[in-house]
Length: 142
Image (cartoon, rainbow, N blue to C red):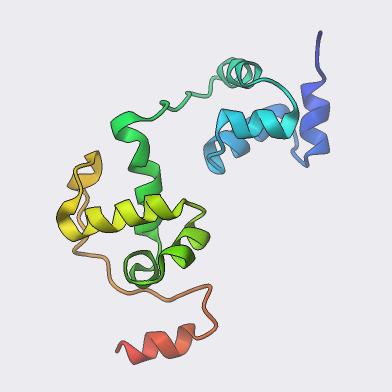
């Protein structure tokens, strides 16, 4: 059965099929399972379409599974990622509370993941984008 992938991409608001796959899998970092649920196809079909479009598949986990999550947390304001509430950091980063908790252990020197090579020394307190008191928080730190 041949599917109209270009039509599906247009229905979702993409210019073409390749942009749909690139955005969902590479930019938004959705899993093949999540994409399959969205489109109503199997994970195998999604994986085959990604390969067809020359998009390299991510590994299934293991030692490297925290790399992208930790990078997402490293990009956040350190007051939220390391010192704020777990639930708020989890919500802002779209990561599980457990992942945020493990990141905090790692950031405090207790981690054993591949990310041990990251340098946290240059992470200063940035502006809090989602907090209404961002300006007052930033000026209070100075």
